[in-house]
Length: 532
Figure 1: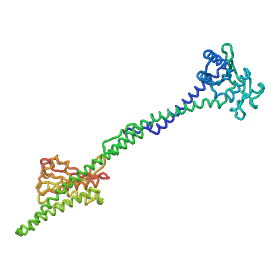
Figure 2 (figure 1 turned 90 degrees about the vertical axis):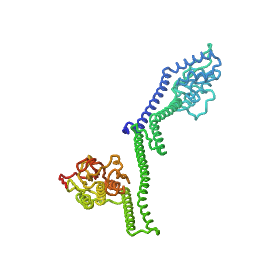
Figure 3 (figure 1 turned 120 degrees about the vertical axis):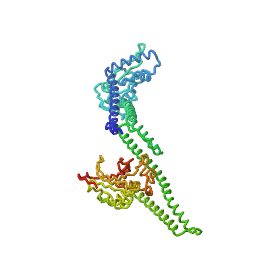
Figure 4 (figure 1 turned 90 degrees about the horizontal axis):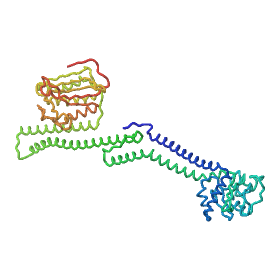
């Protein structure tokens, strides 16, 4: 898993991306405002008289070349970039402006009426209805549709009713072939604020919306795009896992929350894969167990049934000694059957976690003494020596005394069964350092032929028997003893291993089999030692 890096976190990416997008939009808006302001400033570098003179000369030249010139189209195409609005009024009644919305109210009608009635420019401060220097156009007066009121001169202020634009208007004649065909007029006073808003507002609004759209698209592609693609990949992996493809894994690179989620998903997938493998193995083991149990149960049952049917035949005359022999065989097979069923129940109870362990301090010397007492007759009958070693002598183990004794009794019985007459059985206990703590080691070692290497990996499997390779003086067991021992040790949190002991004078060849149980301890051993 790649380490989660704070600067790659989605939270910081979103925060930085939002700030960067907002800063970019603001910078672009400022650039647009400066560009528009630059146009206004450029328009303001020349006086109104200079502007109207230049426009009049340009329009005159154009009309001389094209007498049918369309004023509105010409002014829009050639003078739209000039921020200051002006008006072209022809004597034949035509009128057009480069910015009609920038002129004060009724300005075009008033100028057209004045020129039509012979009031020639230059115009002073005239009462143009709707124009006030201190606010927007007034709509509370009737429109100017008659001759202009008498000129009251420059003393008529803009605040009085009918007051004209402050400073009047600048004008220049349009001359074509030495004839005045009209005039270009422009209010000398700058247009009010609402005019600038009305002129520049739409441009700024559309530019702002466009910048927001570009910023949102950039944020989606640069900030959320990579995470979205990896989330889609994770979604596909999850869908594949749901379809049963347990080997699918998500990409963990990135160092952000998505990579952390991918790592968690992969851990879950690995856990599911492990559980699926364990479930498959458990199913195979269950099938194998059913087959093995059926085989093991059929052998004594078949013997019991055969001898019982033989004894029940009325046509056979069986003498009493033969009857006793058959009844003895039936009893032996019944005892084997009971032992096998008991072992199966014990194994199922242990592996299923049934029952509670009565944990207590168990003295190892007393435990070995009970094993010696239990198998004393068999050891003496076959002249097998028993060696016991406990280090330290007061060694105790926190365990269930009954269950631990059952495990050691099974190991001892198995070792005696495979030890030749005159051999040796060794019980040894000590405290060992496992590297991660201390553990009590209980070893059972015999001087038999040992366990062939090919059988060692399977020695604890149910019903597995290696008797063909290990000569035995007695009858073979059920094949469940070592499985029961392993289950008991596992319930105590320990481990059990099987190996061949080194060869010695008492045990030439492989040196016999050696089983070692290790149960964890919470404290180190004492310094005393004892050997018996």
